[in-house]
Length: 171
Image (cartoon, rainbow, N blue to C red; front, side, top):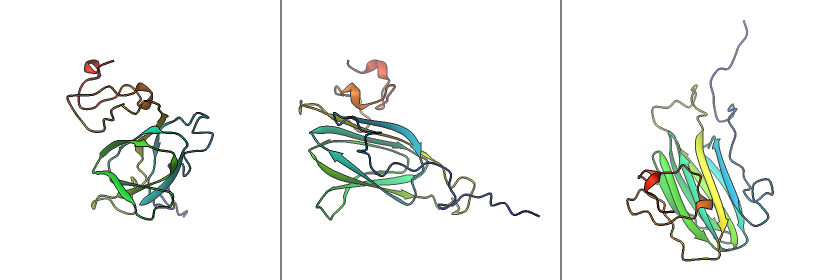
């Protein structure tokens, strides 16, 4: 008889974790742009660091079957600021000034999900974008709307949806 551990836990999870440092050359280009789209497993608490060297637009979007809260703070701050929280889909955008930013994602498991289960390591689709900008008059849109302002196309991955079909989005 051979014992086979066939359940997943936070210690026995083959799914990839998000990168801890978003500023590494493999992710961030020399001009400070970053566009990461992938499926990641977020344990109870995940921290990432982002070094922004010029004024930039930042977007964080997460689609998941679990609830999440996202917090951020800058280097030197001790208090975390709530950016957004949601029971499934979460998205927000910010204008960032040059600084080192810490991003913390907290994951809340559903009460019906067992700590030891075949679906413990379910992944979440995440998109993280940073785009240096010179024009600070750009609008940021992070929630469903019928009055969609022009959004810089380099900050999002088409096809994208803000609660309206993309054929109605202004160029």
